[in-house]
Structures are given as structure tokens and as C-alpha cells.
Image 1 (cartoon, rainbow over the protein chains, first blue to last red):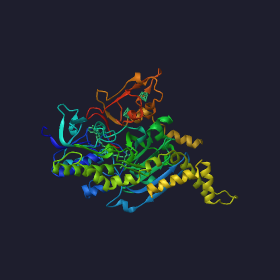
Image 2 (tube, each protein chain N blue to C red):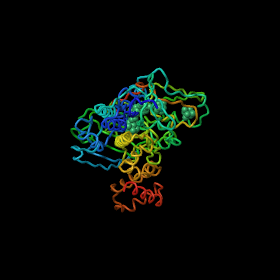
Image 3 (tube, rainbow over the protein chains, first blue to last red):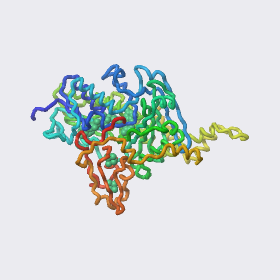
Image 4 (tube, each protein chain N blue to C red):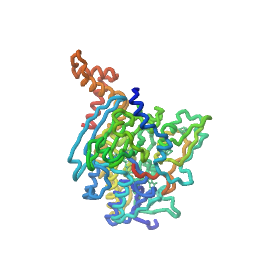
Length: 434
Length: 105
Ligand SMILES: Cc1cc2nc3c(=O)[nH]c(=O)nc-3n(C[C@H](O)[C@H](O)[C@H](O)COP(=O)(O)OP(=O)(O)OC[C@H]3O[C@@H](n4cnc5c(N)ncnc54)[C@H](O)[C@@H]3O)c2cc1C
Ligand code: SF4
Ligand code: SF4
């Protein structure tokens, strides 16, 4: 085999790729971080909240220079029907000071920052270059082809961090049949408003911010919605289950428009000016859709391996990407030290995933994506819950107040939910979230 | 709807789709990274792409075909995921450095 150009090629300078490249460069290996966009982060969009705790290991005191918009000190979960809203609102001052919890950030800023850290540690970032395929010898992956003239890159290990569509993992035969039902598409508007207006509308100050996760508000399409505060913009969008979306004949931008006009959302977003419209696909099904992650000469990390955790009240992908990228980097360091880049030599990767939150959370929440996107949770429960609360607080004098149990059983029947289904979903919910 | 709600509505007119997608930057390359074989689309019962593509790039023609333009594309992958007709969509990323450029997403 001809000498490789570098020890490792990492494809994709998203959070997974930047973390992998950092670990490898620090261990003294030559590593190229390939990115098809003109800069790291230019192709990437998400809802808008990162949970960077795992960075304590990679970049201690990361908050001192991270490109954060606002620190999430107010986290709300909202259930919307056509004209009702029920919100559970949690605030914590603690989340607004070190070591922090979640933060809003723009991905073009965040990913650029994280990739620059990999560069500072010695990784070579090559932008505006698309990996077009794998180089293989026998069964072993020995590099990638790119769209640059003479652009073949040979390496001992290729780490595919190329995101949800991962054509590299597909080419390597690591995915089975691709099923659209495992994916959602996220669309969002970045809407500008003066900072003081955002502060007043969301009841926050300084760098504090609010995260609102919404069940309902998606025009009857299974999915969810969100409103997040940046410094002087809002991120307003929704996540839509693909096969259901096309069945509904409502287009994504029409669904966002409906959300913005909802009586509970409109006062928050009104008069804002759209600065950017964006869309991206999410691997939604978690554990049940994960591909093979280790091959001879190859590892797959982040969304490329479906590691995004999409479990209703949680939508976390960036932290799972950073962690899995970090573990892929560590496993590659081990393999290089042992001179064995076969799947067996790279086995430390999956061991790390299994022993940490990456696969533990996924295993614990394996039923959650299906439950949260199920027709009952999506179409029956929001009305049932909102109507129950409405009747609880409605004063029907001269009629006396009905008992909560009575109201709930009325509303359950009215929504057409059987006790059996309710019990089953509650049990599933408990198993997942409990 | 009440008149006050209607009045408020006027202060906040719906945005045209062209204006909406006009907020996003695209550095278009001359090569089409996605192509659609209109002959395969004819007779497609679902035509899921028309509703699902967030960039509204699949336009139905009166004779049952599809008019497709790759230029303002998010490179998201929704279209090839929802389309279940072999050969209708040929999908790849644009040349490195081209295509959509997000700044505040
Ligand atoms: C609408 C939406 C909302 C979300 N909300 C949140 C949230 O609030 N919080 C959260 O934590 N997560 C959220 N996520 C999930 C999160 O965005 C992803 O899980 C995360 O971005 C995965 O990181 P990654 O590095 O694996 O992949 P990506 O971020 O997708 O990075 C992949 C990189 O590879 C590059 N690339 C791809 N193919 C090639 C190639 N062939 N050659 C060269 N480069 C290539 C891409 O340009 C890109 O830079 C959301 C996702 C969406 C779509
Ligand atoms: S692209 Fe696919 S889904 Fe769209 S009309 Fe053609 S065959 Fe049907
Ligand atoms: S990749 Fe996304 S934006 Fe581009 S044509 Fe397909 S569905 Fe539309």
C-alpha cells in the first residue's frame, strides 16, 4: 500500500468532525478535516440550543470564548391546540453563570469556533472541498476521493462525520434500507427584533434566554415546534415527520406561518423581520436506525451515525455529535498506536459509546421518538389536556365545580382515547422518561 | 374574526415565498447538483416532493410533469428521502464551496 497522505481524514467540519480532529491532532497525528462548505458551519442549521457540558473534557472553560448568543435560564414546554396553550415554565438563575447548562448559538459561529480550535491544535482544515467517495483496497477503507483536481486523499483511518445524509456510510454499506419514516425535516426562520424587545417579551435580561419547546402548532403534521431567543433575533421553526408532511398538503413555510399567527406565539414574534430561512433533515429514530459504526479503516460519528437524540422534550444532537466525534478520535489514536486500523483495532469506539451517555441515553429513550411522534400524542392528547385544564379553571356558576377526575374522564372520552391506550402510553412514557 | 384582529393582520402581511427564500444566501454553481427526470415523474401518484421540499423547487406542470430548478436549494435531502420512484431524482452535493451559505441558523 502506498504511503498515506495523512494519518486520518475526518470528513465534515461539524461538531463531530471538529471534536475528532482535535483529539487526533493533540495526540500528535496528522489529520485533515474536510469541509464542503466555504467555512465550517456554513452548511449547518439546527433549532438553536447547544448543551456543551461534554466540552469540559475537550476545552475546559469553553464558555470564556464560545460564540454564545444567550444562556438558557428559562426552559418552557408548551402544548398548543388551535386556540389554547398550556405552558410548563422552568427558570433557574444558576444556568446563567458558570459552568452553565444550555446556550443559544448560531451554527455558522459555533462550528467555525470549534473547527478553529482543532486547527489551533494542529489539524489541517480544508474547506470548499467535497468528499465524493471512498478509496478502498480489498475490504479496507484507505482514504477518500474529493472534487479537487488530483484530490484523492489516502489515510490510515477515515472518520465520516458527514452529517445526516452520510453518503460515505451508505457507500461503505453501513446502512440498510433507508426509510423516510426515520427522518424529519426541520425548517426555521431567524427573525430580527431589537434586544430590548426580546428581553421584555421573554422576561429575560442581559445574556439570559428562553427555550420554548412546543407540542402542537404544526398544522396537523406530526412533529413539534420551537421558539428560541438569540441576542437580537428569534429562532422560530418546526420539525415535521416526512411521510406525514407530504400527506397533509401543507407546506413547511405555511406551517411556520401558522405557528407565528397562533395567539400564544404571535405576541412574541410580531413585527420581527425575517433574516434567514433555513432547512435541514434530522435522523429522528435514534437507536432503531443506527448504522454499523465501525468498519475496516473507517468510523462513523454524529448525525452520520444517527446519533441525534430526538425525543420530544429533548432535541439534542450537537452534544451527541461532539462526544461521539471525540470518542472516534480516541479510538483512532488507539488503533494508530497499535498499528491496527481494522475494525477490530478500532473497537474502542463502540465500547466508549456504550459506556457513556451517547448510547446509554439512546437506549433509555429508545421508545421515545416513536411515542412522541405517535398519532395519539400528536393529535389527541394536546386537546384532551388543554380542555381538561380549561374546564378546571373555568368558572361555570351557578353550576358547582366538577371534580378533576370527572373532567378528565369526560375529556378523555371526548378525545376518543381509550383507557387501555392511555395506560400503555403512560407506561411507555414512564419507561422512557421516568 | 373580529375587526381588531383583522386590522392587526394588516400590520403583518404574509410574506411571499420569494421574499422568504430571498433572505438566504446561495452561491450557485453552474452545474446542477440535483436533476429530476420528468419522464419518471409522469404518473407518480404521490408527488410528495411538491409539498415536502422546503425550498419549493418542485413545481407541477399542467401536463403532469415536474419543473425543477436546483439553484435555491438547502441541500437537505428531503426530496430523495420522500421520493419513492427509482431514477426520478439524481442527488449530489454541489461543488465544494458552492450552494447554500447559512449565517444565522
Ligand atoms: C431543525 C433542527 C433542529 C435541531 N435542533 C437542535 C438543538 O436545538 N440542539 C442540538 O443540540 N441539536 C439540534 N439539532 C441536531 C443537530 O443539528 C445535529 O445533531 C448536529 O448538527 C450533528 O452534528 P454532526 O457534526 O454530526 O453533523 P453536521 O452538523 O451535519 O455536520 C456535517 C458536516 O459535514 C459536511 N459534509 C457533509 N458531507 C460532506 C462531504 N461529502 N464532504 C465534505 N464535507 C461534508 C457538512 O457541510 C457539515 O459541515 C437540530 C437539527 C435540526 C435539523
Ligand atoms: S420527484 Fe419523485 S415524488 Fe416527485 S413527482 Fe417525481 S417521482 Fe414523484
Ligand atoms: S435537497 Fe432539500 S431544498 Fe434541495 S431540492 Fe431537495 S428537498 Fe428541496
